[in-house]
Image (cartoon, rainbow, N blue to C red; front, side):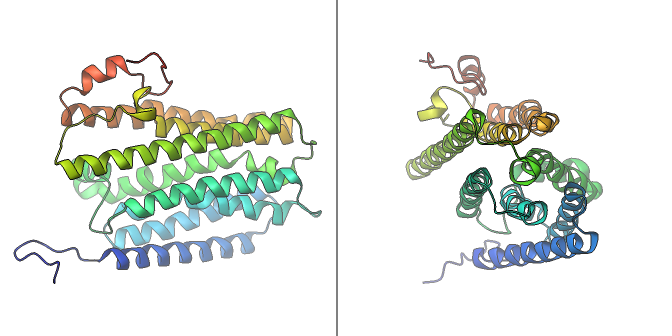
Length: 304
């Protein structure tokens, strides 16, 4: 039986074809990044990684523009850190990787794989674009793709790069022996990865139930979402603080890399959370009252 509904516009790309396009985009982006890194050399690793990172971003942006969908960039956030975590030891260490290096790579890869999988199973394909990008299209008109390049592609790349700065110490030049700060970093990184994963699963199950029951405008206030409005964002922010702690554990000189975790926190608190709260108020009449009872990020165990 055909799934085509007569008179209804059909997607230009199927879901399977959409994933093929995205896979091609990221494979080409990786190839270009490696080419840039090889040409530039590894004498100054963070500068080289930054150049390669932006080269890859430009490639992904090219596909976003060609496919007329900025959501092609969405998995970049979770795909790049594991690749960088693996690449740094190859060009900064002559000896065998330490236990810390393997631990950091494993935790960053776990976080990246989980988040990428969460994106992949929820992405319907190239006929769908993030609602925030759709809003930007309406507001910026003919200047949308300029805004998309700088605001939706380049700025997130900078944000992720800043968050990755501690990795240049943790899996690169840091030589301090394993200690209590590594244990704390592991607990924080793994713990907040778990919080984000649990929150995403709870939200996915909630949305599925609402669709099955035909309910609209219902507020998610179960599980972790009962105690704060954005536990998934809390998990994301906490992960980057864990990465920073690993950098600090490997070399106290890495203290300056706190800029990454701080910037990520500011980005979510000052931009992402207000934006999604504003949308929730417009879509759910009771959400304003919900905001008064439930904190945005720091869980309140006494919420009733």
